[in-house]
Structures are given as C-alpha cells and as structure tokens.
Length: 147
Image (tube, rainbow, N blue to C red; front, side, top):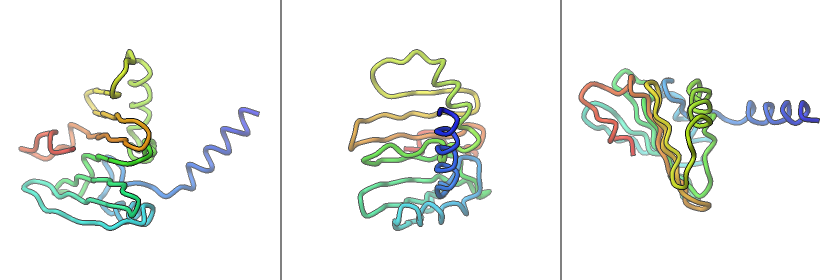
C-alpha cells in the first residue's frame, strides 16, 4: 500500500507545473506565471533583477535573477505553503537532510548550509519564506535583498 501511495504522490508531483528553481535559468518564470495565473512585474535593480508574480488570490512569489540569467533566490508570501520541492529543485534533498538533522523548536524553520539557506515560517493563511544559494549571489549583492 505504501508503494502505491508513493508512486501516486510521485506522479502527481511530477506532473505539476514547475516553479522557478534555484540555480536554474530565469526562463522558468513564465511557467510560474501560468501556474499561479498571476501577473509578472519585472524590476531592474543594481546587480540583479526581480520577477514578482502576484496571483488573484494574493500569492506573491519573488524570483531574484543574477545578471547571468540564473535564479539565485526565491521568496514567497501566501495563504498556503508553497511546494518547496519545486522551488528548491536539486537543492531540495540537501534541505530535507539539513532540516531533519536540525533541532526543531517553535518558530520559523531555518536551514543554513554552505550551499543553501532556507527560512520559512508563518501559520495557515499567512506563510512566508525565502531561499537562496550563497555561491550564486551576484558580486556586491547581500543576501538581505532576498526578502
């Protein structure tokens, strides 16, 4: 029974539209726009660009893109928790291992490794968080821009 459930879950997750993924090219932003049925607003900043997707139900996903065209950070505000597997892509496994080994207390979940930082918190109807890859941050850009 567990095998059937696992296969079903993998099929559902595998067939879902992809989110912009950390370390991937910015072209994935259009997939997010379709998935969220939202409006994209691009903002140029010194040293990076920001793609802000806002859906009709109030979800906001911000994707931070380096001058080379790669997503170095993602942040979110939404009524429901986003699918972190899609957001983190190849970094998801690292996130799982680090979050399982961390001592969990009340408050936001914070995972910090040399390769990935994820901060996530909130409660039903008010989730927020951010994730970034320190090695992908553009020169002279602080991680604090990902918010």
